[in-house]
Image 1 (cartoon, helix red, strand yellow):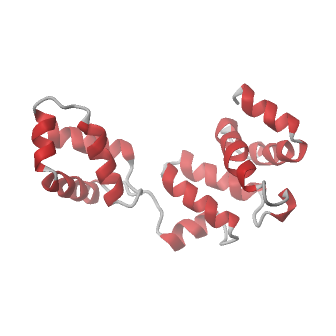
Image 2 (spheres, one colour):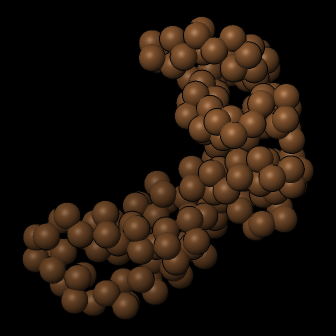
Length: 164
């Protein structure tokens, strides 16, 4: 894990212990540290660690969902909010809120085509050399999918459509 994260976890004993409990059952200590140091620490400003409505294994499940490509980073933030609100396990929150990552190529092709059809002017500019618009197109597809689209699949489909 990053040195700065390690220092925070060492300095805050209870937070460090929580991290250790999550990381012990998970293969991505850096991902776990990111959630504990950034998101959990921010939430703990107003409450004690013992007041959390979830346990370390739930946070580990959230990191696994991200690592396995089941949810996007944006969806993971929503799942974390659900954890903090006591809405259940990460899998239950994902199912209840419809947050599973969208990676079906046919459905993503439909979204990509819809975005490009609505942005004909920008498509022309992109094809004239304004390659910086690529990020704009990715963002528009992500917005159309409510943050659920697999970004790498979206980028691949956009390249095919824009450069093919």
